[in-house]
Image (cartoon, rainbow, N blue to C red):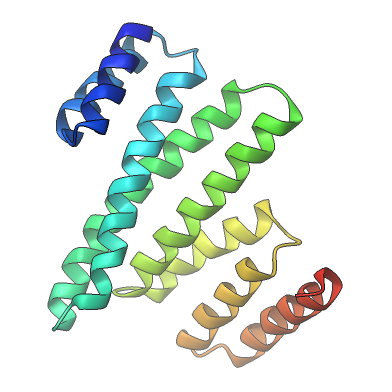
Length: 172
């Protein structure tokens, strides 16, 4: 497993993300109880998802945005699944907190990608992010925007108010 992880990391650093993905998948197959291969896999999928989400800004048509959103959502779905597996395997408060932060980031990006085509689908991702980090104002602000897109003014107002209160508490 470790050799496959090292080779995958070297391939990723050299820009061969497909080769890296294959090595990380093999590392997971050889050592499924180790968090390291899962972390590498999650990081790679996360990177692919981020790159796709960044492409949304340059879309000239809704059809192009939907296609890119689907690609991003697929990669970030794999990332969130992998981060959940890491969460099950890591020990210690610091490792759990770091993994939770990465999972929430992937969920938020996944929600953003899903919202292009289906805000109702995005809602589940933002709800999970807010559940995992209930004191993070950004999660609640994103949730408020999705509720607004769905036409649920009451839920949008509640989520926005919670985000405002949390910002005030945090001094942001």
